[in-house]
Structure formats: structure tokens, C-alpha cells
Image 1 (cartoon, rainbow over the protein chains, first blue to last red):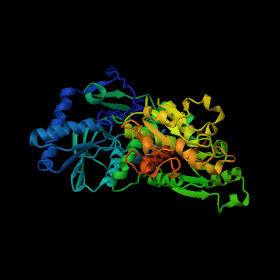
Image 2 (cartoon, each protein chain N blue to C red):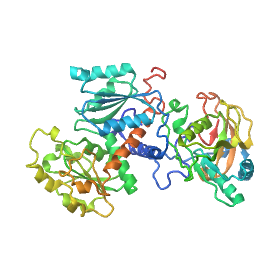
Image 3 (cartoon, rainbow over the protein chains, first blue to last red):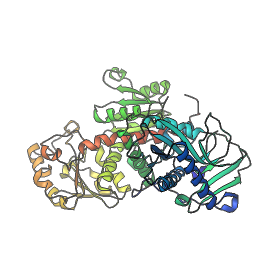
Image 4 (cartoon, chains in turn green, blue):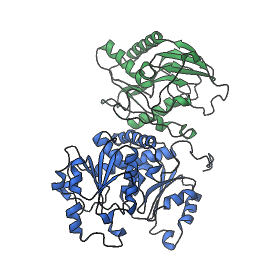
Length: 224
Length: 314
């Protein structure tokens, strides 16, 4: 998973601007079991979109903020579904949480992701944070801190594609695409067409030890 | 990245682009209601300034504070240095206080290099004598990329007192790494002897160089470092190497005018040119904070690069 982390390679960030640390992502699906395929991911997102509409009475003041890397394309997919149903555009953006993480000192300095808040801002809005995997909850904690420096939303909710359990903080998701019971040793990897060229959620066995030495939520796209 | 930033030559192309990309993200912060990030909480940055400076010291201080680091300002005037303390003893004092990074400006070329051997924290060169000023070069490159969209193949002309300029040397090294073509323009007396070994071209005719220039960078005559007469009169220098409205007209439409400051209006740059929309001088100052934040974040934000500093020893 460490090998996958560097690089804010989300397709929305830094368009037209040279990115020095972009790395080609290599992955062999044979390494694990595909838990969700493209159709299931699509259906899960459609259901989550409808739940958001229900819970927020039509999503009139909803702003979707994806957490890089893979939360960003998910946020844009959800926004597309919301606007399809309601017939008006749903604002979506990205929120980089790197500078707010609690595990920065455990690894070499990370490349920053891109933060793009929709022009309408977040003050008084219902912000729905979007990420691919919910694991320890530390990324979401960082996101809440980052959000606080950007403005004051009326409410903050959380949507994730996969909840794999093992929370280390009192954080829960409001919208879950798929609950996936896992052990600490397993690795959950979310692949998205925008970033990885294909849609899949893959569950595989992690390396023999060392559990989670850093106790952190791992990089976007994976959740070991 | 390396643990210290002492010379622009230490930066690979990837390192330099990483700093510029990081600075680009951090520059967004200037528009936010809360211009502060918690990233360097609990870390200490010492500004060790043996030479006068406004811009650079304030810029580093703002950068460190926006990242929530604690900042200690140390200037040679009014400190124990005035009582004769050596650089090494000062370094050991800072070490004992637990400085995670030392930003040093010193009149002697090579002082940051020496300091890096005495302290365990990161050393950032904020200008050493006539040697280097790498963060200035980084912010200049950042400004060029923001204004013109690219660095690769950019034609940059640096004009003035190259001999005494650490900005020129750092810019030549960094811009060469980033793929720009640099031309130095100065009277022969104000060029270093070894300039032929630098990765750049040299010209003595400013007006001839300007039409083939995307970026013109004017440098101050550093009278305080001059021990001899390098040109007959200031007026003559200004006529031949100053950037006035007439010379600006020779520049291509898109070209920008830069100056690292402090400016001597009427000598190397006419007041009207310095205040024109082509001038990026004020922008350079704002960009300086973003670039220095990026440098401090990349040096201090992650795990300790050199493992000679055990975690928790602070």
C-alpha cells in the first residue's frame, strides 16, 4: 500500500500542470478476490445518491467533497446522479487532508493532493464527505479539521463506498455502499476507472505481519 | 528530498517540481478565511540572520507560522555574536534549544554548509555571501511558471551585478535543471571569472538580448560588497544596463519583468517599469511565502529523513 500512496494522481487535480510525482499504478487483480464489480459499484452509488436525496430533502444545499485520491471521482459520480434525479447541478469538489493527518511524522513528507471547493462555498451548506474506504476513521478526522479551516457547514455527513470496520475513533458513515467485514491483515483496494482504468473492489491477504505498525488509515484506494 | 537545502544544485528536477507543485497547492491557502495549517505544530524553526534582511526573514517567518511551527528570530545585531561568539558555538546553542530547522543568512559563502555539520536539524540557506539563495530561485521559477505556464524552453535573461549575486547563481543552476535557457547580461567586470563553466550564455548587450527574452530579471548593484570600481559611474551603468521604458518596448508581448528586491529605482530599473503590469515584483514576494512553506513542509513535515535523529529525542 505504501507503494501506491505517493502522488496526488487524481484525474481532476492539476490538469494542465506538470505533476512531478505521478507514478504509474500497477495492479494485478489476480492478487485478490473481487468483492464488487463495476455493476455493483454503480448500483451502490445510485443507492447512496438516493439516500442522500432522501436524508437531505432533495439535496438542495448539498456540497459533495471527495477526499483525494479516489474519493474525488466518487464525489463527482454521486454529483452526476444527484443532478440526474433532481434536474439541477450538484456542486462537487475535493478536499485534501494531508496537512491535517496525525501520521505525517511516520513517513517521509507526502505529496499534497488538490483541494477544490465549489464556488458556492461551504458556509451554511450540508457537506457530504466522500471517500472510498472507511477504516480507522483517522482520514475523516483529518477531513473534519480541514473543513473547519475552510468554513462552517450547517452539517457534515460522510459517504463511503466500502466500510471495512475497525474504527479507532468515534466516527461512523451516514451512507455506505457496502459493508465489508475484514480482518486487520486483509487489504481492501478500490479501483476506479478515472484513476486505475477499471472499476473494482478487491479484497486480498496482506503481508504476513506486521499488522498496522502505524495504526493509520492507509492511502487512498486501499485500506489494509 | 534531502535533509538540507543549501544549494539549488542539490535539487533534482523531480525535487524542484515537487516543491513547485506543493507550493501551488499551498498558494490556494492565501484565499482562505483561516490561513493556517496545523502541520508543523510543535516544531521549532530558528531564523539565524547574520546579515540585514527584510523580505526573506519575514517571508520565512510567515511561512513557518502558517504551518504552526514555533519561530525564534535570531539576528546577529544585539546578540552574543556581537560579543564575539563563533558560528559553531551559536549552532550548539541552537542545537541545545532543539531547533528542528535553522534558516541561515550569512555574509560568508559556505556558512550554511558548515552549519549543516554541526546541527541535527535541517539547514535552509537563506543567502550565503555571494554564493547561493536557493529559495529565491525557487520562488522565481514558481512565479515564471504561474505567469507563463511553463519553464521548459523558457528564455530567461538575468541582468546586472552577477559577480556579487547569489540570486543569479541559484537561478542559473535551478533554471538549467528545469529546462530553461538562461542568458546573463552584465559588464565584463561584474561577471565571475568562472562564468564560462556555468550552464548559461553570456552577453554584454542588453538591447540585443531583450527581443529573444520571455523573462528579464534585473539585479541590484550590490555596492556594499564592492571593494573596487567596477564601472565608471552609476549613470553610465544605468544607461547601458538599466531597464527603462525604451528597452521594455523591445521585449516580446508576453514577457515579464522580475526583480528579487530590494530595488534601486532609477539605477537598474526605471520606476515606471517596476510599477507596470508586466512587473511581477510584488507577486514574487507573495509567492515567496508559498514556496518557503513548501520547502519547510517537505523538509520537516514527514518522518526524519536522516535517521541520525531518533524519534522522540526532542
